[in-house]
Length: 360
Image 1: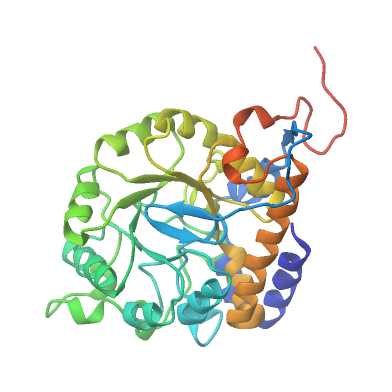
Image 2: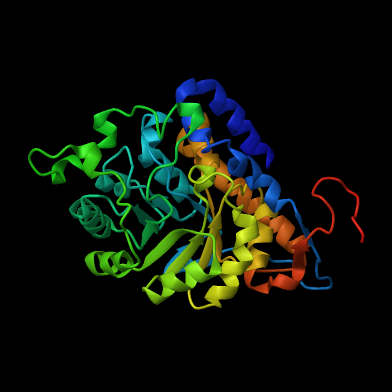
């Protein structure tokens, strides 16, 4: 973990209400998957190139028409106002300070339009297929009207995973935050929290449906299999995000680091492939990019930075990761992300951290 991210984590632990900290940090079940995420990236080893001109290093990216200063994207996460009074508005301002792309969660604790007004860099909107599909359609239309450049459809939550640390699926969130974007669309007599829950009957048809409703490209988040990625592309997905939801859904799910290559191979360059889950340094990102990812998302580190130092903390976190990536990219013999390929990385032939090869 980058030193600054560790400092933000320690400060966030001290300033956040313990129930909020546990909610953000929690994984589902026994937290096996949540606990494996960072270590999985450390199982890989590099085969650097040499004698390449790396006097100038460029880590900027273009994704579906959006230009960003680095491949680090702030992942969609719920209820930022639990971490900072300005909530997602501060997160967006912080991402803009680093020129980074950011994804706004359906469970935002601030109005879509207010968050968009704070944005100075490209942003996407994350959507759930909710039980009341009218709510999903209303939110993606508002996001498109407010300037979102794409929709990110989360598909790994037919039901929200139970988390032992919070004694259920989430802590109690006040209505003024939970329903801030939904209340105006609820029909008379509707119980907002029930209508807003995920629809477990959702099928791939929803991908084209949201593309038509929003007029935007739709990326699918929560894919861990190559065959499922291909199925999403067949249904019209404009991108795939390899993710196990931060270990918050099905416990003992494979780490994203170990699922990425299969998805990249299945997609075969037809659309961008992104990945999240335990990425906490430039070296982690270098592994992901060498395996074929086009960008990486960071989740909890953004929340810790927000709690620790507001918008300035988010900017500092993203800039620190970008600086770290520029350095390791150059040391690996690459001047730009496009210089990386699968030949430059592989799984270590010994248990991670043991330092001892295993033969036979």
